[in-house]
Amino acid sequence: MALKVGKGAEAPPFIVMDVIAAANARAAASAPGDPRVIRMEVGQPSTGAPAAAVEAATAAMRAGETLGYTEALGIRPLRERIARLYVERYGVTVPVARIAVTVGASGAFPLAFLAAFDRGDRIALAAPFYPPYVNILTALGLEPVLLEAGPESRYQPTVAMLEALDPPPDGLIVASPCNPAGTMLHADELAALARWCTGHGVRLISDEIYHGLTYGEPAATAAAIPGAVVINSFSKYWSMTGWRVGWMVLPEDLARPVERLAQNLFISAPGVSQVAALAAFDADAELRGHVARYAANRALLLDALPKAGIDRLAPAEGAFYLYADVGHLTNDSAAWCTRMLAEIAVAATPGVDFDRTRGHRTVRFSFCGATEDMAEAAERIRRWLA
Ligand SMILES: Cc1ncc(COP(=O)(O)O)c(C=O)c1O
Image (cartoon, rainbow, N blue to C red; front, side, top):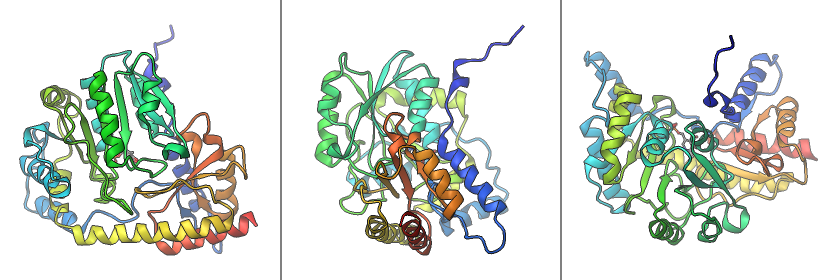
């Protein structure tokens, strides 16, 4: 008799992971003299963890610390240091009791969604979107409600889009700066969305993973908004993707429920990563160097890509992505990216990962690599499209 396979097994792939695998295969198969593969598909810094973080982790291991399970919400010194970040960065006081250390932002999503919503609840979010939001919501039996956003709203949701929903959703996910467009909700826009959510009993979930990576005004936090859940991570600004450590700022009513869920689902975030994350707070000079490189890469590409024929770019206010409308070049962004990788060894992510209805005309270029690579990629693309 056939065995049952659950609905969760239908979760679509996170396509960028497949693109990464294709770029790895292309790099592995290259012969001497072939052009080096330039990686503009990955959403992770090309740098490793800050030296201070690596030293702290190494010292803890050398000292024979057990580095075993920690409390489900994380080690106290890290939670206290995260609380201090809110005072220093945003002038917001958050009690340590409301801070939960998680297995990256990815580990925070199921905790937040399970604690805040019930099966069948409708959760609004802008499209294009970070694909796991939709895939995790769906796997948990929640219904994503996509708000088609474009250049008019800088790819961000608006109150008007929410007003148009009947009935109102149960939750709203925002990300600022967002992935893939790199655009932000400015403080007044975030405040307007928050007011609407409060007025309609809608739980706001704010993914703030790209805070610290902004090129104009700093990003506004939802940490002071009553009822909101803030999600953040050491993966991007702190350059610690593989350490799998992030956090949430929880509203009071969800702190204990999330703790119970975390005890059952994850037990804790990796102990060694928590030690490293704490030390990473002392690495600001090194991290500011990364941000300066991203800013230089962004400026270089904003100049060079239009000259190469890719001129419809979202105004990347933060993160490290340029989201390009390539509809004048292709109607099949996945095939276009495959060809670009095969013919000029530049890897980028097709928009279909982020937007199932319009993504066949868009591509996301990640610019967190080396500046020489960005210049070389833009030049290869110019010659390719000429
Ligand atoms: C918007 C957004 N949220 C969350 C994540 C997941 O990050 P983490 O490594 O902390 O799980 C990513 C990773 O690319 C992202 O772009």
